[in-house]
Length: 518
Image 1 (tube, one colour):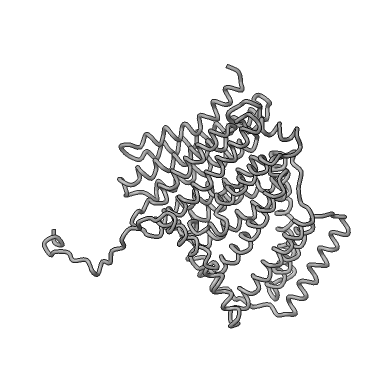
Image 2 (cartoon, one colour):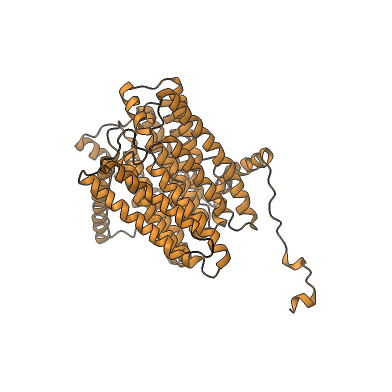
């Protein structure tokens, strides 16, 4: 047995361990075994990484069913880390519910094993089967509380959208198979790279992949289910936002050599993902519930990740995916501390900047940015520098009167450290996802600049003009999410009706006295 086969077996052992552990929960929930399986996955991933660095095992070889790239190894480590944290938290969260925790742990591990299978797959049939298994397992977790109407309705909408995304993904992969006569993703890479262009059917397949990614990432207007699944257990929300919702971005990064050759697919991602990024972030500002705010934040972040893929910045999208997964897992599992945090924010004084403050901050920020561009000689794209100028303007204007010389130096030092750390991480992600051209044309640059300006204007309106009668109507529309989810809910129930659980009113229940005193 050569080293390549040993490496493939080690990769396959990780999802298989989750599947076997899931089946071992027939009598009782075996939390210790589940935690050990996640630690086994982390250990095997570390061994594989060391073997790749030493050149013992090579990834991305044609004809290999698993491990098409270094990115798969990174994603596998992320999945096992999220699994370890989530399972440990769930073991305490589900304590005292002996009957239900067996079902919960079984579907949780099946979902984790399916995600691990997706990220190591180099065969499109294995990829789509594992992709469907993720949706099936997640559906059972979303209806963990079957008596909650919002949870059942959200799971129903998610079920429809998931089947639609799977249909598009299956059609795209079948087209790619007939066009390139192979099910292996790495071999399709080689043929597409050698050709340097896509034919009409390939273009159609890539468009279907882009649409499937948009649906998977809950982009507008197919987003309502993500907001309403907060009715599910907190660890389920953490798993969904940290390890499943971002698989649309992973899909695009996996098929990156095809995405960069399809202008139509890139523009669909730019428009839908860009609008979702801005609108979801602004809608989040109007919400109060912690979990709902986090859900809108996830939508916005997923939109931005898809935009990065559309611009050809796949290394940045990978870094974004990893950082978002870790942050959202922490944010949901730590959401109980938000009450104390909100009380502290309420005690702090907030002074609205004057028009003079805004103009002064804007002039200073533009001067800094234009000076940097002139001195360093930076070329297009320029939209990231516009974003930097907007962020600097907001920082300076909103901190007026609270910025001493020491605080300015402290912020400058912190910004320098963060910039260095970001640059190192970005270079590391570029090493993992390399060899792909950045496809930012002036049209895309102009579109991103428009989105940044729109976000800045919306932020000012929602934060500092809430008392204006005209702006109150705007805020009301943002709070309602422009009623997009209501429209899609009616459409879903008309196309595929479902029966929601009956909500009983305790005051109207008639309980016989003899039954009450038993």
